[in-house]
Amino acid sequence: LLRPAAPQPLAGKHVLITAGPTHEPIDPVRYIANRSSGKQGFAIAAAAQAAGASVTLIAGPVELRDPQGVRVIRVEAARDMLAAVEAALPADIAIFAAAVADWRVAEQGGQKLKKDGNGVPPLQLVENPDILATIAQRQHGRPPLVIGFAAETEHLIDHATAKLQRKRCDWIVANDVSPATGVMGGDRNTVHLLIRDGDQIRQEAWPLMAKDEVATALVQRIADAIGSFAA
Ligand code: CTP
Ligand code: CA
Image (cartoon, rainbow, N blue to C red; front, side):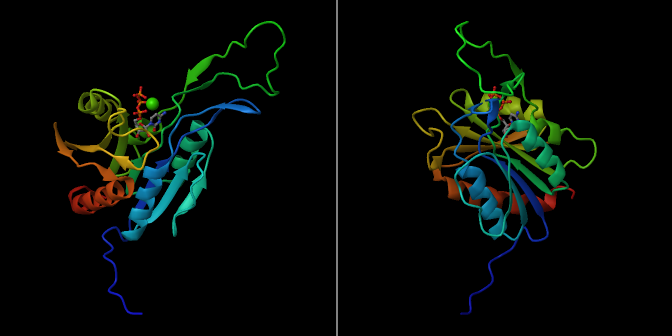
């Protein structure tokens, strides 16, 4: 069977992607989680692989199968995800699609917490490391293109712009998850792409698309931009 070779605009590039939720243990049988499905990050991994990239996908606990030809590293908690990301560097492009748990329990119980008749357990929360901000602000070995996500239910552009500035990534895929449009865990996304351009931030509004179409469009945008940043 003779087919024309697919275009490989990301050939020779290492693309690192985080996806899915994280699970933060409370005790050996309980954890804190969120509703991230991992679908968008897995779709980006597949699209980047199809574009010729070598892809490392660092995935929290999700039921999705490994995309073909992608190196998948499965992790549970945010701190494991950060360690796996750092171990997978260097990368040419890093895309942080994971819905990392913002907080974990300060002291994980070694045994299952029991109802002991003295009321509810006092669970103290502490903040998890910000994986995207940590990588975007690295002095050495920062990937030349660092892309974050922002899922917002209101003030999409303002909140996403603030995240772009605060975390110092290059692009943000701002995702409208207000109940009217994007509900988390669905198959479609309404996306605005925010692009840092010197002191300016450029904005592209994309139409409502399936998550695999968002993935293909994002990979296409990366391929178009790849000449314009230093590798
Ligand atoms: N992110 C991360 N590590 C964290 C929290 C977030 O890498 N501990 C990344 C996400 O993968 C995403 C981006 O940061 O690319 C924005 O995540 P989001 O949850 O929207 O931002 P937060 O800074 O956590 O703010 P908030 O949840 O309060 O809106
Ligand atoms: Ca968050």
